[in-house]
Length: 243
Image (cartoon, rainbow, N blue to C red; front, top):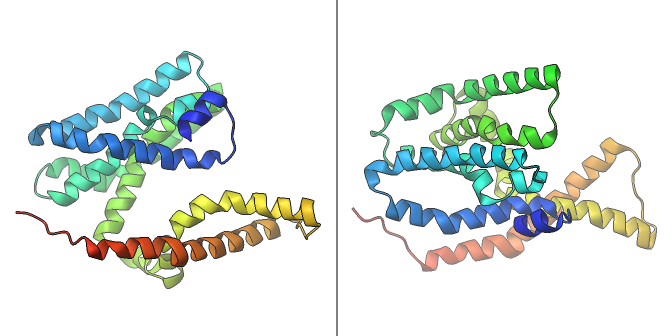
């Protein structure tokens, strides 16, 4: 979907580009882990993360479309690499202690500093969306890595209360289906109105609330009828960690 969208410029179901690039990187990344020397894996990951903004800057300088700049695998190596670093630190918490602490302590501040700088530059000089795409992924990667690492470890205080609330946990459980199906709900509502004359709310907040409810209902049906039964097949393939 991401390559097709970049080549044709067609935006139908364009939100699926993110799942496409995710799957493409899942094909590539095991070979990176297998082929790189173990003691060099962090350095290789950081180097690959650096390639992403360099690629986006080069593509923007050459006048590429926004989709070409932002949606192919090279463009996502910084955010994907940030997730890989979180996994490395979780598997081997005693190694690379300085980097792990820096990520957990300064991740949100690094993103905030980047956002302030980008906002100031945009107000002062103006910046188009394609140019903004050069910096946006790298800017948000530290915050997202901090969030995932913190949630894995467990937040305290208000964050813990919010994340462990049953409605929030349920939304997290069906979030994949919500992401895949929410655009289709908007198309379905519009198509039903045009074809059968069904009600189409003109009030934007009410329409958003209705689409949110439809997306949750569709994602719930997907979870119980499709995703959960497939996920339960994992019990037929027991996994045991080797020493």
